[in-house]
Image (cartoon, rainbow, N blue to C red; front, side):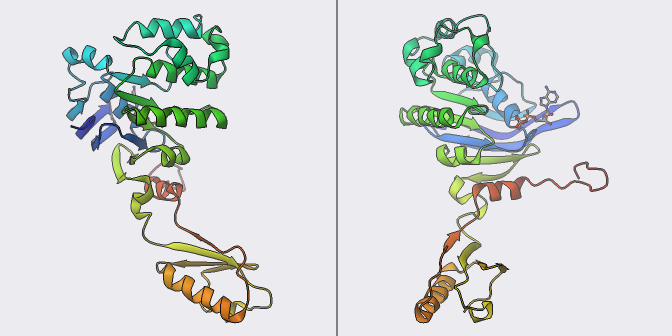
Length: 308
Ligand code: ATP
């Protein structure tokens, strides 16, 4: 059974169609990421799955129950963890007090000190929430999300505002939770984060899923064009190269090809025969960010600046 199953989900706010015919499944124990530009519909989807927002239509199952049914919500709340985009705790309590209060909502919470340690707030455990930095508040949010040992954890942009060290610590925490069997639904704007953590992703654009799959093969990333770069050897004219460059800037040669094995073979054989070295030789495919930007590209009317 999937941890999350979404079929033909729709939600509008007055005249804004925020989620329009979205379908995806998240397997148990999987880290699944929702990507998409601001306003694409990620938070709307997540809030429907959490049972905080009513859908207009479509089928939704979370841990086998419908989060839209009031009678299922208490059961579901005990089994999910939620990290929202905004901190939703009383700022005059201390970190420890906030965690203790929330632990009381769950049948078998994690020990408070373990949570404080896991999110790296040991030195701030007795500090008032309002005295925490933005990044420290974000860590507390994550602590609140995991205190109930959730089967399923929703993380809405969990590392926004965190410094690079704290981001890596949070990644480690997510990996640990995942290895313990926790299912994680993540929304993020950071492609490195998604690549490091998610087994599969769905890209949303204006309420639609425009691509879905593992980050490594999203949008045909593992196939298609490759860019080969190297520096033109000293004393060699571009016309002497065995393959015509796609681009030449100074001594920097760039060749785009769909047949990298053949092209690399020709170039390296030629270099060996000519006894020249190919400094800076580099072979790259499209990055996840390249694919993401192509999938979510918005055309604007040049005259008005309004989206077409
Ligand atoms: P972000 O990356 O900025 O968090 P998102 O992908 O989470 O964006 P949503 O917050 O789901 O996007 O918003 C989807 C669309 O619905 C947007 O056009 C947004 O303006 C609209 N919307 C969201 N909440 C409301 C609301 N309460 N009332 C009216 N419109 C809303």
